Length: 339
Image 1: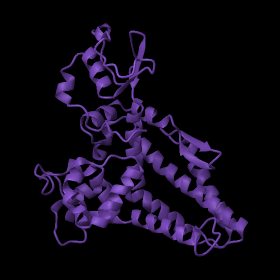
Image 2 (image 1 turned 90 degrees about the vertical axis):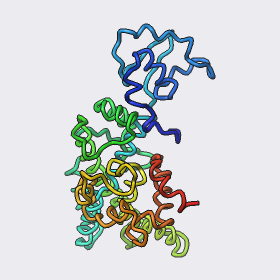
Image 3 (image 1 turned 90 degrees about the horizontal axis):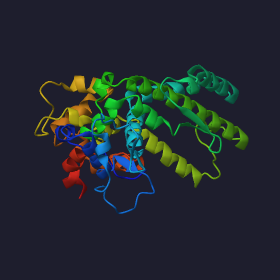
Image 4 (image 1 turned 45 degrees about the vertical axis):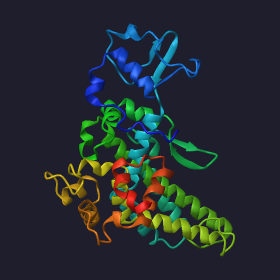
C-alpha cells in the first residue's frame, strides 16, 4: 500500500452534481479507481468513451469496462479504512482491559502446563475462525493469526456508506456506527480476534521459554542478559506507553477522530457535546482529564497532549508505522511544537 491517503478527497456537493460518466472519469483522475495495467502509462483519460454509462447509476464498487479497459476501485482505499478501524479497536479501553484480564488470570497459575491449558481454553471459546464479519487466516510460516487479505474489500462492500463517508468526509464516526450495516459487528469480532491472537502469542512464548529452560513469563528468545534483554525491555516500554490514557486519547486527536467534536475555531468542543459524552463515545471513559485538557488547550497541564513534544512524536511515529494518515487538523495544531 502507498503512503497516499484518500481521506476527504471528494467534495460531496460537487461530486453528486456529476453524471455517472463524469464520476467515473473523476474517480480515475483522483486515483479512487484504477484502470487495467495495459492502459498506456502517462496517458490521460480524455480519449475514453465514458458515455456508455450515461443511463447507469454510479457505484464505487462497480466494475466498469470502457474501450476494452477494466476500471475498478483502488484496493488501497478499503485497506486504509480497515486499517484505521482495526487500529482504533486495538487502542480502545475495552481491548486494553481484556489484555490486562488475561495477564491477571495467568498469574493465578503456577506451572506452564496450567497456563497453556487456560490459554488454549480461551482460544477454543472464542473460535477466531468463526467470528462474524471477520475473515481470519493462519500464516503457517510466521505461525501467526492474521486477518485475511480479503477482509478490507469485504468490509467495504458490506458497508457502502463507510466508503462514501471516508472519501467525502475523511471521518468514520464511531458514535454513528449504526449507520453502517456491519461495522459494529466487525469491531466486536476484531476485538475478540485480538484477544485470541494475544492468547496464541502467549502460548508460543511459554513454549519457547520451556524449550530454552527459562522461567521468565512474557520474555522470548533470551540469548544474553545484556543484548536481547535490553530489546525486550524496549518492547515492553513501548507496550506500556500504548496502555496509557494519554496515548489512547492522543491517537484519536492524531488520526482525526476528534475532529467531529472541535468547535469551528478549534478552541474547544462544540456546544452540543460535553467531555463525559465524548469520552464515552470514543470508548475512553477514564481519559476524561486528557480529553478535557487537550480540547481546551490548558497551557500548563501535563494532561494536555499538545504540551509535550515527546509524546506528540510518539503518536506521529505510531501512525506512520501503521500506515495511518495524520490528520491535517492535528499537524496544524502541533506545527510550532515540532519544528
